[in-house]
Image (tube, rainbow, N blue to C red; front, side, top):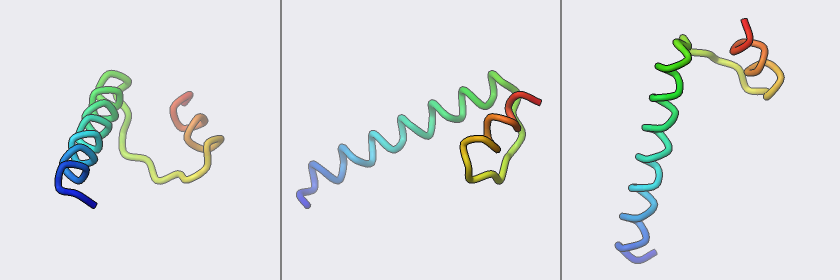
Length: 46
């Protein structure tokens, strides 16, 4: 994998992590340890 692709993938990862952090702060979510979509939705709805 060329260095340019690695750099791009890392930048995209950082952008996704930042978006999740902002979303969790906005929704005031605590850490969750759920793996299924239904459990995650249930956690957020509570």
